[in-house]
Length: 143
Image (tube, rainbow, N blue to C red):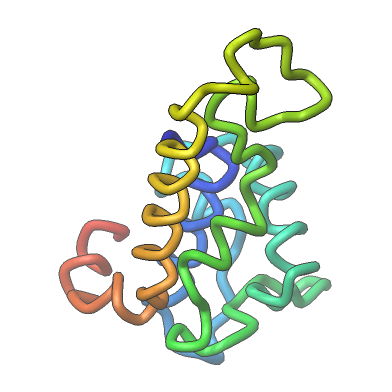
C-alpha cells in the first residue's frame, strides 16, 4: 500500500516535533525548509494534525507548534487511518464505484482485505516514541 504525501508529511512533522523538547515551539517554515516541502502544503497538514489533537498550535509573534500529546501516546496506525482518505486498494473496495464484473465471485478482494488488515495491524503496534528511538541521529539529520 502506498501512503499519500499528506500522510507522509504528517508523519514527518510528528517525527520532527518529537525530537524537540516538549515545551519548545517550532516554526512551520523551519520544518518546510528542513524537508524541502511547500510551506503552504505543510500548513494544511499541520492544521489537520492540530484538529486531531496531535499538534498544538500557538498563534502570535512568539508562536509556533509542538506536539499535542506525548510521543508514546501517538499511535502510528491511528495517524495513518486519520490522514489517509482512501483505503480502497482496488475498485471493488468502493461499492459506489465498483464496475468489476468479477466482484460477485472474486476471491482477490478477500485476500487484499486481509493484507490491508495485516498492514494496519502492524502499524497499530507502534507509537511515535517507537519510531524515534535514535533521537540523537534524527536530530543531526534534521539540523
